[in-house]
Structures are given as C-alpha cells and as structure tokens.
View 1: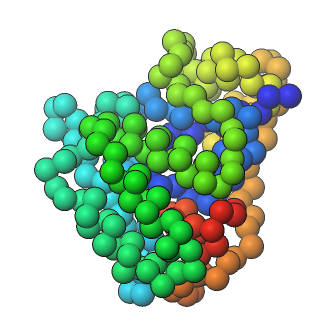
View 2 (view 1 turned 90 degrees about the horizontal axis):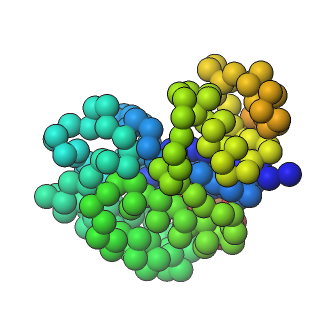
Length: 223
C-alpha cells in the first residue's frame, strides 16, 4: 500500500500538518491550485505573553493582486523587512523556551532563503522542518504533473500518477469529496483525526492550532 497526502503548501504549518506528512509515503504539495488570500499559505500564529500573534509573509502577484492566482505564481513582497520582524518576534516569544537555542539558528537559516516565490519558500521550509523531526517521506509537487479534470477528478489524477493506493484527507474535505470516485479508482480513503495530547507551552493557556515552531522550541524533535 502506498499512502499519499495532498495539501497546499503553508507557512510554518501546525503540528497536524507534519503528522500527516509523517503518516504518508508520498506527500504532494498542491502548489498549482488557487491561492486563498486569508488562509494559511503565507501566515501562521505563535504564542506570546500577550496572546496569539500572526506571523505574515507579505505577498504580491505579477498583477499586484493575488486573487485567482495559483499558489506557485504568488511572489513574496521584498519591499518590507518582514524577516527581521519575524525573527525578533520569535526571540521575544520563545527566547526562554527549553529548545530555543537548539532551533533558533535553524529557523534563521530558513528565513535566509532568497526565493521570490512564496511556494518555494514555504515548501523548502516544510521539507527542512520535516527532516528535523526525523520524517523521511517523499515529497512531490502537483505542478510537476500534467493533470486533467477539476476538484475530485484532478486530485485522483494526481494520486494515480504518483502511484497512491491509499489517501489520507483532511477532515474538512468530507463536505465536498466524492468517495465513490475513489472506490472506482481503487484508492482507499481515510479522513485524518487530529487528536493530540496537550504539551506545556511557555505562555498558557494551551492552544493547539499554532505554528510548528511552538512545538519545536518547547519539545524539540517530537510530534
């Protein structure tokens, strides 16, 4: 059985995203679908003494708007010094965390990337963090393939081309996925359940839906 997961590339994604990577044999970044302006593609949250704070990568497209733009065509806006701001915010939020000294330099190296592409930046960062967590999953990008159809049909085309026989989907996909098409294609379908024990955070109360950097700084290389 070859297990696959297909998700849009995201900025320093949360614990559950990396758990799905860990559970898959092949993880496909769905990088050529439409960018969602207020989603997780270019931002995520951290815990601070003042509460949750967004870290946002400013973006633009060739037409100065990201509406209706594929994720892999969205560009980072380098006219702002957002990297320095992010690193300072991380230091203030996690400087006293148990594993801050271990990962601060690693995180800084992620931010040192000079790519103009948001997808390139987030994909490379995700692959690097997966390596820190000891995950050895194979990574591919949907833009590597010639895909036909839309919605479920396009997804199935991708899964068949990467040789998947089992697909793990996020739970929200139940609202629109067409399971009978998976059955006809001979691909078994599983919905992910996010059920994790809380861990000690530097700034309580516990919040599960924060960037993986929170877990890295607090618990090191474990999910």
